[in-house]
Image 1: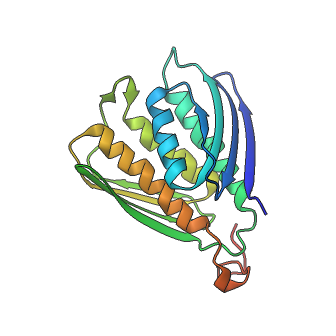
Image 2: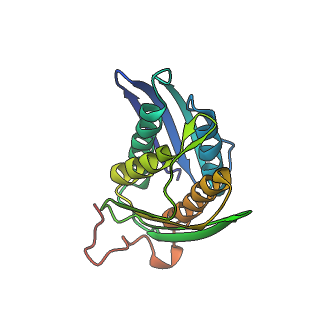
Length: 197
């Protein structure tokens, strides 16, 4: 059975259409209006075995902030929808990903309780036109709207592109591990409470 979520979100700042399919090898189609962010989302989806179809028309003439943050909101909502009651999932996932000179560890708990923590050199400055702080905005929006306990630790890295790519790839892999079905628990909800909200 396909696990998927569809979100349409329209504000005065952005107009977003997003489809998410879990455990898919289909190539994603991503158009955020922010080229570097497209590359990061494509990397996350590929290594996280997700199909993302995304179209975003945003006020990028003002700034990329609204588009990136609102995509985080929409993706979080789509992930929450795709997970349903979370029966049978592994729930926890982590991944350490090297990207040349950079190394990042990302750990997630699909607990229904949002918490985001980043540790590492401050994400400041620009990669082309992309403001590095937008990665933190995206991760926080994703965490809040999907109900993810999300921890990202960048141990080191010199090349800023490599640092961000290691973040997005490790996030994808950690999410894949967490949302994968564990057949050994027979469809149970992985919580002593008997439910995950």
